[in-house]
Amino acid sequence: MNLPIVDMHCDMLSFLATVPGANPFAPDQIACAIPLLTKGNVRMQVMAIYTDVRPESTNLAIKQATIFQNLLKENTDVLGYAGQEFLKNWENQSQIGIIASVENATGFGNEQASWKEIHTQFDKLLDQVGKFAYISLTHHTENRFGGGNYADGIGLKDDGKRLLDHIAGKQIPIDLSHTSDLLAEGILNHIDLQKLDIPVIASHSNFRFIWNHRRNLTDEFAKEIAHRGGIIGVNFLRAFLDTDVPERLFDHLLHGFAIGAEKSVCFGADFFYTGNFPDQSRIPFYFPLAENAGKYLSILDHLETDLDKNQLKDLAYGNALNFYRKLWS
Ligand SMILES: [Zn+2]
Image 1 (cartoon, rainbow, N blue to C red):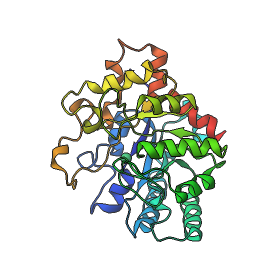
Image 2 (image 1 turned 60 degrees about the horizontal axis):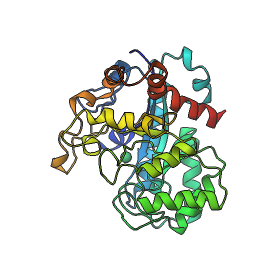
Image 3 (image 1 turned 90 degrees about the vertical axis):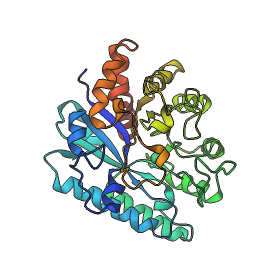
Image 4 (image 1 turned 45 degrees about the vertical axis):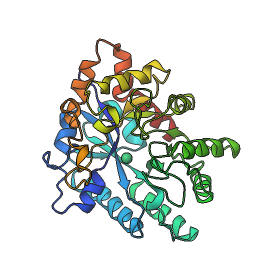
């Protein structure tokens, strides 16, 4: 099955920003290395500007945005900018389109930053990368904006509301992949109460119905995203699929179709640099069947008995492409 692929999340930028000697073309260094994206027929790859909650988060975000700019500048033979024009001429593209997102709003402002500083940083980053494919308020932990996946009981804070108000109407989706349940609820409620124009997605999340993990979406949130016309990128990490059963990946992908999210489900593989990860229980991070970006097409082949041609197209690229074409037209 040779379809173009859209993938909603990888951590190439933080890899290049933080690992000495990091090479975006080295498949033995990172599972989303550019030759692997080519092998997997990836036509559009979202690259996250990832920071955790630290005083230096804003500098690290700028560094990653600069790396994003340089990747485009220095690799015009393989990489293109996945903006409006790229999506419009999708059928004729031979490059891999890349676009940046912000994973953790602490990249806009650390815990001490003033709102003037946050707005300046927001504009600076946006100016560097052109568009944000999405913004996630948090990562696993709590920050000034709200509670992350592992911050149970921490919802949307006043600063989180203020940031949502700021991004409304700017064609920037909000990402629920790293929210606590209470934060996800708070975001949805605030958007509705204030009638904010903010699309809602989950860029790299699986389904809690299939594997009970706080990083995975409840069916309630998944259906809400689908109902609002958002997208859900299924994650390839073993920890979020089922730590023992590789084929559970297919169950997650099919669950999206089963609950009425057939126009939302897409890929959000979440390949990152695993060489310095502290938690040894996470090894291997990926099952062989989904161990790198060269595997998308064989994953689609495996689903041929369960999904028809149009469904496979929707999953491979159609749903994500439609979402961004509509958003940025
Ligand atoms: Zn993530």
